[in-house]
Image (cartoon, rainbow, N blue to C red; front, top):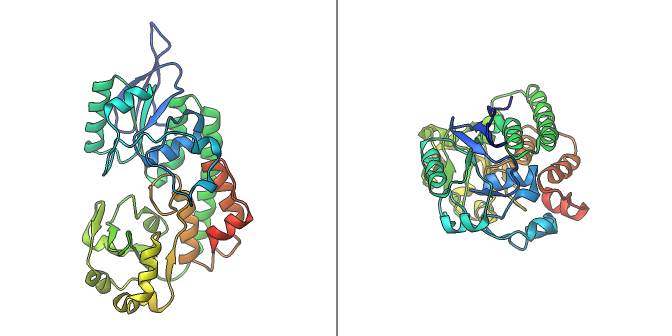
Length: 329
């Protein structure tokens, strides 16, 4: 169900909404220009209403460009307001003349404080949406209500629910002990996500064990190779090709069960990562991709139709045969 409460203003057709942090915002009657505070928000908005996205947080690399429509590539780079390396300032935001600022991900006190501060300084409403995978369809509906794109939101949310429902039905047929998985980020593979991290949410959502959860709950953390050796994961996944190559070259990594047994997997990462980078709606691709690597006995069909449909829904451009071969190699 949508999580926005609506009220009609008396003097003007402005709308009052309640976001996922419980903050009350007043929106203009028409929301046509939207500033995305971070990469996950830009992807969520691009999937829903690309014509309302004012710009991207970072430029596209050459390998990413063929997977995006020309209209999306033409948007300027405006920087980001959230996360590490925030590069947009208030002048950038004001110059873009947005009707609304959105962020999608964590809605904890840190992000509430940032949203309140920027909204207070600019006078622009700042909407916070919960980025949990289990609420992805709800976030789509909520954003559609805020932007006035309810029809497209219903369509996209229904597609997401259908795909996740099919995935859950297959997961119910899996047997055996849950695999123990390590997600290695960065060229050395020693950055990972703790239990409950949005970056490793896919692992837990699929009923597998995130070995780094042994260190507790939280966000991203740096670990030692000795620690990973102690965990002895059954499966290692990454989106970094340098780390993927290192797994087969370094004698310490080669001694781990996952590497010895050939259970190391490099996830696709164009035009955006399938596991995270960013942890946005793109992770629907990662759910299917990882499920096929963890449970090949119940995910044994050809993924091409799903990948093509997901790219159409998220990026508004289906990959051609050569691009599908590249993604699924």
